[in-house]
Length: 227
Image (cartoon, rainbow, N blue to C red; front, side):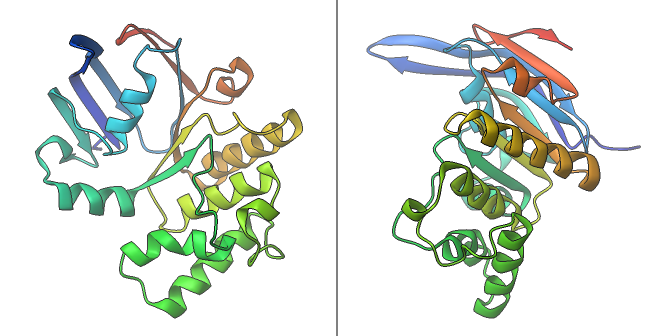
């Protein structure tokens, strides 16, 4: 029997804001098979970011089950979650989240430091990841010396350097121009179609979501449409 890459059942999450309880997620069920490309859409406040944070092991649900590769994530302690997050999940953010005073090469090396990879291997893997993004001539550039598109490609290289089984992308084209957005989405398409990488992305842009095989719509913390 093939185990889904990711499976959540009856997931709930609430927050307290100024004394008011906000129900961010209200019983979400979702199964993602290995190799899928899924887009998560919905209006602001619908629960998209909360769901992404839980899937990325950056937050924990109040109730429900989350399994990744058949492992019960909801029962893991913080150290286990950190290891899982570093080894199995790659993150790409709208604002790139690069270390500003650190070169592209050193930024990409960072996850490997936490994974305990030796210096020489770290450098080789980070260099290869950047060359794969056509940034072999930008290894020692700081983020402010790179264009928005180049910074996002550094961020993607950093996300991929640990060879994750799941890539989570939060508005990956939100801070780049239209031409660069097309390039970023073509890169994600290639990673999914040619290399079988499982991708979940959050986006407000329909043309970006159209790259996905499935689109998940959230409204008021509930799954509304799945297509």
